[in-house]
Length: 56
Image: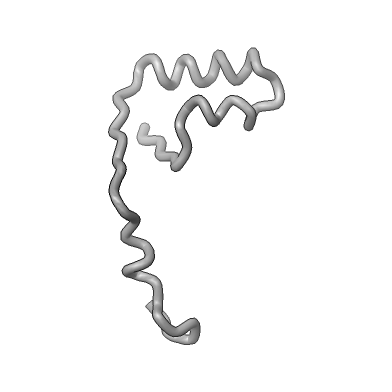
């Protein structure tokens, strides 16, 4: 399974209503995962049409 996010795992906790559920879910996900952190500029602005009426 590949999971992507633009947030750090510590920022995910407030997304869950119950902190115990958040801890158990994120603990299982984070403890057995490999993290590839990419700090590069986004390619999306390059792909965005210059004119709103233009199609990609």
